[in-house]
Length: 221
Image (cartoon, rainbow, N blue to C red; front, side, top):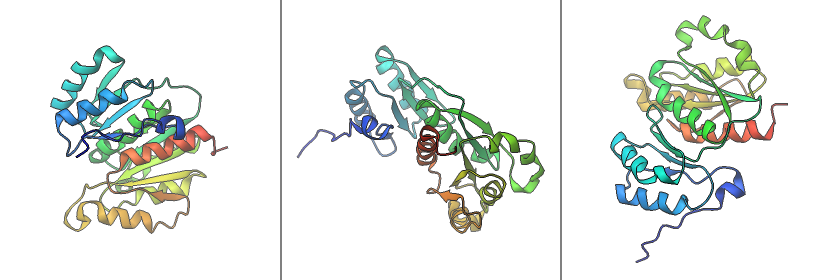
């Protein structure tokens, strides 16, 4: 049986973002072995859903190889991040503080890939007046990532305020009938704001990648 990992080491050069290491379900040795192969290339490395114990092991192992950092809220380990350049930025927004871990995953992924990020947290629809003082910041962004649980309505509200792509990220926060983010997912998929597109539940990584593509391609102009 083949024991080697078949890694897409050219993805960064082909698409502008690297193959991420999703650490959940992998052993510590598997994660270290994968990073050992990727670190040979001069590209950013992103490991997601990293618990603190594993993060400390990665930092100890690869600190001599480049800039290694554990982003604890996002549960991401980054190695050799890109320099943040340009005036364009991505707005990352949450409905509540419980949505911040998913939002941080989006924000950190975007920053590791060289994007400026403006964070706007805890402005959900239960107190919708809170979002209006940030309206100009959102309108001047290249795109907005909106993370919301419960019924997930904030993405539609933001979509109705701006002429931007709004990336809805349903989160698994909420009570019983929220079904672990399924209600928010359906709300975002059924948004009447046609500029809202939606990723899977808790998929901050995917939202960060999409926002990176939009921001880098300048499609907001």
